[in-house]
Every structure is written in C-alpha cells, then in structure tokens.
Image 1 (cartoon, one colour):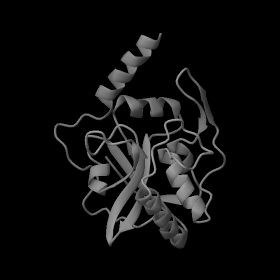
Image 2 (cartoon, helix red, strand yellow):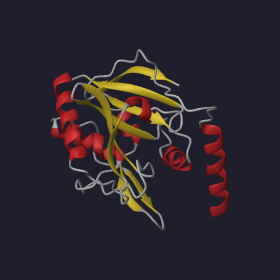
Image 3 (cartoon, one colour):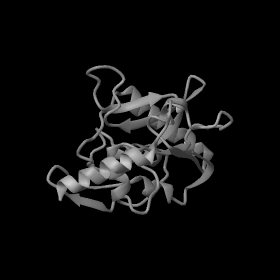
Image 4 (cartoon, helix red, strand yellow):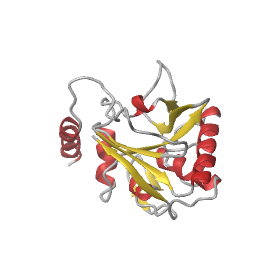
Length: 201
C-alpha cells in the first residue's frame, strides 16, 4: 500500500509542473506590495503530499512579500531548497522571480490584505523572522513560534500586525513520522481578510 502511494506521488510530480527550461511564471507587469501573500503550486513529491492533504486547496506553498531596502522580496519557510551545501531548512528571503521559478511552481497567485497598514506591519514581522535566521519547523507544531512552517509564518506575521487570518489549526495527522495539527495553504487562501489581485500559470 505504501509503495502504491509513493508511485502515485511520483506520477503526480511528473504531470503536475512540466517545464522545458527554467523561467519565472510571474508576469513582468505583476505589481507586488509589502504584505502581499503569494501562493504557488509545485510539482514535487512534497508539493503533491500537501495537495493530497489539502483537499480544498489548489496551492502547496505560501510566502509573504517584504520590502527589503526598496526591493520587493518574498520571505517564506521551506524545506529542501538549500542555497548552498550544508544549508539548513529555514526561513529564507528571495526574489519573486525565484519564488515563482518554473522549477518550483506551475501556477501562482498574489493576494492582498484589505488593511494596507497591517499588511506593511506583517511584512516587517516576516522580515524580522528572516533576519533572526529562524529554522523550518519539521514537527509542524503550531504552538511553537521559535521555528516556523510556511503557513504558520504568514499567519504569525499577520497576527503580530493585529490581523487573524484564520482560526485555530484543524488539519490533524497521526502518521508514523508525523503527528501534528496544522494550517494548510487553503486556510489562508480562504481568509476574509485578503482578496486576489493576480493569478498566473
């Protein structure tokens, strides 16, 4: 049974995001603002595990746009994307074109908070997470804010800005290697506090 699941995930990865060469799927005229929440759908086995778990969602990863010395960047918490050999899984900051690289994404969307002031405050909180070098939380412990997983990072950044994007985590898993109750991308995507400004693939 376990082998069949992994075979299915491998097939999904092959079919999910096929690109001939690396490029950014984000249009050049896509305007980003600090605090924007960016979603992407990947084609890796990990991405497809998220999509299988998040049956009401269409995205496997999420980040937040920050203003880094006048340049819009994306802060996100992600496993398995080291910047150099020996790099730890951690909160990282990268250009939107890299976040939306066809190596990691086959479709994406930019959402924006109704409260622009809170959005900028959330962006500042996310930038602080990055500057502290916070590690990725492989235990997906939603009560532990010393390490963060992707959805938790965005939710915690907005919480610090006084905005509750969603309620308590409700997705529970009791697996041999993972026991947790966590948030998934759809929990943020369905928030009444944000609205969509651009979809692309």
